Image 1 (cartoon, rainbow over the protein chains, first blue to last red):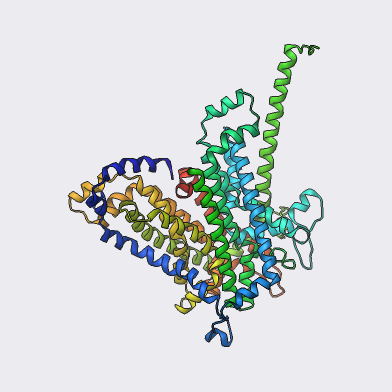
Image 2 (cartoon, rainbow over the protein chains, first blue to last red; image 1 turned 30 degrees about the vertical axis):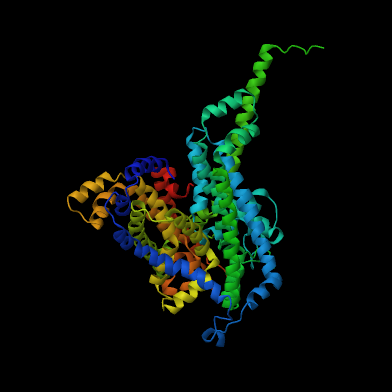
Length: 318
Length: 287
């Protein structure tokens, strides 16, 4: 919530008071009936194109529905076959493990640490240079994914084909490394730290403003080291922001499709995150039923992540 | 045993040295961060102006000849137009629906309102990503909307609406209801009040969700990728992957210049808005 909303709510709420008739019509005279009319278009769009597909995954995952052939027109009900297959499918297990490493390494650790380090270090930096550095991070965050893929191929891989050249980084460092072949997942993790740290940086820029400078001064004067200041003064005040940040970037990273554009899951499935795996099963192998079952497992894992963070968030506020 | 006394000037010298080391460390960190973010972008800035662009960023023979290649390519222009139609179409739908919904949610207390909104917000960031690509494909197929820009607009609008409503409700909550009360006294209906009284006040909020939607849709890849396969309908995000010659090697002069033309508008819009509205841009998801 931004600062103004709280004061507005405080100003509005008392006037509502316990008078029920006012509560139903609302202070602006917008009754429940009109509220229903106003909500309908959004409810329809969200219901049909967001909630329904997610629920439908549940059913599709129980069938042998396919992209082409007989089962495309006449899918049959298969029960839990797809889920049993997923449990014994080494490619799914591999993909799940890669996704978790990718999310933990690039989002939970990478983006949070770099985003926070930038916000913390640049906090009192009064120079136009700060704007430049922050703008670079924000541009990395805002460039369309299709272009980003070309950027990272040129940066780490270079040309592959008749005319082999190394990427820009190799040219700068005078080395010869095939990053995506030798360190595929690590390269992808570094890519995603580059891609997403701006969000954490902006979020923590805002959060650090809620730490009174006088507290930090006092801590500094009484000889607290930087780590002690962070642990005792800063962290307790911005824990909520940290949790919100980690939750959102974990979900975004988990479901990001850009890895497909950079490595297409290769080499040998070493960067095949779950979105890439689902895409391959659904649209290259045509097995929509199995892909739906994997999608549902993804939705469940995402929900578990969300519930865990929300629990921690609530525990903090109590 | 007493510690040997350190002369005062020596202490002062150490202090200066420590400050100097601190500043040097700070600038080293800043330079490192700047390089980390800037280096991968070198290709986007240099390759479009290179006479024979490769996948390595360099600028040996500067030229502007790659840009006419883009602007004379009818497919490239069509794809930029398609991206514009998708972005503006989704934006119009989202701004309209989100204003109505955010206003209703802000003014009328419905049970469980905040919880439902928060769950939808989290849900949308999950579902629109990739977890629902199969059911969305099947749904759009059954609705006979494969290969139609409208189908893509509807799906993207459904996915971006929760966040837009969330952000906009925050803006609407801060508008005092007294304006609406007086408008009501003069006989204005709910639509009229929203359009003529509330909307002008929350204009920054409307700009924020409009820009956010445009930027999101302009860059979106997966949804148009699975819902469109007719070459004339592809948006720029997908079109850029069709610039390969029959031998399978990338047409880099075209790709490099096209990438810059396609990227520049969103970066400019975004930086302008970020500059004007700052962190309010994330008013809704700040937590």
